[in-house]
Image (cartoon, rainbow, N blue to C red; front, side):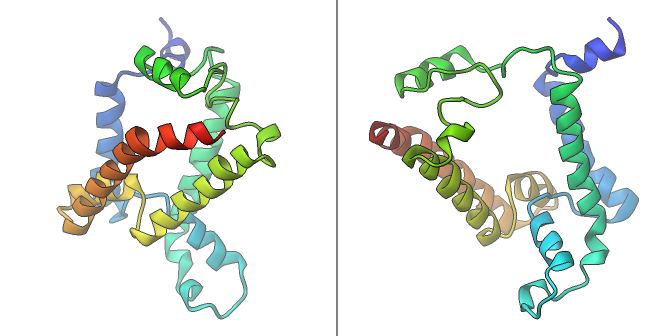
Length: 190
């Protein structure tokens, strides 16, 4: 199997996980940088909004490496989707597919369920709820917690940060609560 074929295959957790985990000490050792992606929007806003908003008044140029990192993530996703994809759908556990079908989600032909996340749903009540309000809540929660799951769970806990442990516990509690309690209620609405 050549290198392109290896890259095209889904990587097992015991390969991908350590690679992601080793990014943290590598960033710290090489550049004294903290891993995390959610603050990128703040840096973009600070760079392009010429105002006196206190939240954006800081030296964002010190963190411009993170903007290149975020751009690389987007560019890498584009390359992976358009050049390295084997054309198959996302690899989901059969039980997850069965659970989603029980909730009324039936289309699994792409990376996201098309019967929820499609352009035709953006201006519907379902799209408003799942895409617009859901996206806002993710962004608000990330800023309210002072970081996202990667920032807290990977970077914060590896630095023995107590707030990151608390944030990660509540990310998990929120995920379980949403999956087991809220999803059955929400999907009955649509």
